[in-house]
Structures are given as structure tokens and as C-alpha cells.
Image 1 (spheres, rainbow, N blue to C red):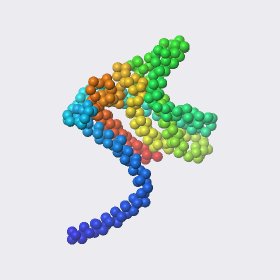
Image 2 (cartoon, rainbow, N blue to C red):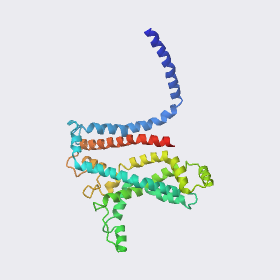
Image 3 (cartoon, rainbow, N blue to C red):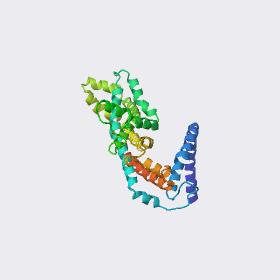
Image 4 (tube, rainbow, N blue to C red):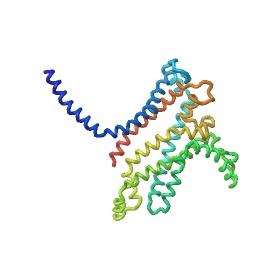
Length: 316
């Protein structure tokens, strides 16, 4: 009886296996083209991530193989380090501020640029998008010169109009806000492109029908545009938030985490312990633990957003 059941199950499984192999053979070239990307992703993303997790359990200075296993020692030290939590807080202030300002502002600008009656709209799109393709480190250096309290172009302008120069990057109360403003100026172009793509998915016939029915532009926005672009908008929100979580290059070139660590973020915190020449002895294990702990929080926030994105997708 048992032998009969096994033979029946093998006979059922064989057609399924053959069917799967047949379907895979139809996409042979797809797998061939994807394979290099998967190999590079494994080598330069998955493998370093696994290595970082491994090193976080060692007291390692980066020389030779890690041998001094300390378990959760690095994590315990990080949890009681106020400088880490300061960097952690600044990281999320930076990210949420960018989302709160950049996300709706980009939608407004996209709606303006999507208007076919606007002359030269392609030129405006080009100028808005130029900062996106400019290296962030270069932008940081340029703004460091522009915002310098002595000899900077903005200080010179303030003097010209009879105002006192403002130390935007040296004032602890202004440094983080200034960095956020520069980041919004740098990245808003890509968010506008996302919104433009979303707006162009709305059929023009719906607007024409609404106009015939006497609907105003505000009503068309509320009852047509927003409901139809909401699913894409949720994805844009997620992309904007995740893209704002690693402002290392901008913060490093603008303020280097200062003044008095008021602009310090987790990226600069990790860099300071792992690579900065200010450290007498690099602490790669400690830096790996700090990066891993921050990565876990980002993953949790992303997972918490998944049900919201699903509901928004169903709303459409």
C-alpha cells in the first residue's frame, strides 16, 4: 500500500517537475541576462552585509582576521552611547523632514510642469533635474563656499542688503536645517520625475468628462487625480524616505557632522569609528555593529509600511 502511494506521488510530481522545467526553458535568455546582476549583487551587497554582521561580534581593528570574539559587547556599548542616539535621531529628523517638505512640494511642481499650457516646461524640467545628476560631494563643497560666513557669496549678498552675515553651517541651531534644505534642492528633481510619470497615467478623457459635468479643477484634483495616483504616490513616498536615510556624502562635505555633532548622522558616526584618521585605532567591529543596528531599524520601518502600501493599492 505504501509503495503504491509513493509511486502515485512520484507520478504526480514528475509532470509538475517537467512542466516547471519546460517553463524555465522558455525563459533561458532571461536567466542568462539576469545572472551577472545577481552575481554582482551577491559579491558587492550580500557578501559585505554578511561580513559586517559577522564582524559586529568582534573587537576588530581591521588588521588580520578577527579573533577577539566579544559577543554582544559592541551592541551594549552602542546602546549606552549618547552620541550614537544623537546621530540616530538626526538621521530620522533629516529623513522625515525631507519627506514632509520634498514629497508634497515635488507634487505641486510636477502638476505645474505637467500643464501643457506652460511654455518652456521641458527647459524648467531640465534645470530642476540638473542637481540630481550632479555629484553630491561637489554640491556639498560648492555650498560650503557659498554659505561661508566670511567671503561667501550669500554673506556678501546679505551685507549688500544691509543684513548681518549668517553662519548657516557653523551655528548649531541652523546647521541641520541648512543641510536638509540643500538636500531637498539636490533631490527634488527625481521626485518630480516620479510624480510626472504618475500624473501621465491619468487618462485625459476623465478630465474632459469632469469639465463637461461642471467640475472645477479642485474637484477634479480631489476626485480624479489623487485617487488614481495614490498607489504610485505610496511607492514614491517609500523611495523618497529610503533615499533620505543615507546623507553621508552631503553631511561629510558640508559639516562633517558638526558643529558639536548637531548634524552627525549614523553614516558619519560609523565612518568616524571605522575610517577617520581622528581615531587612534580603528574599530571596525564597533562600526559594523552600529551600521547593523541602524539597518535593522530601517528594515522594520519598511516592513511596517508594507500593509499601508497594500491598502493604498487596493484603494485604487
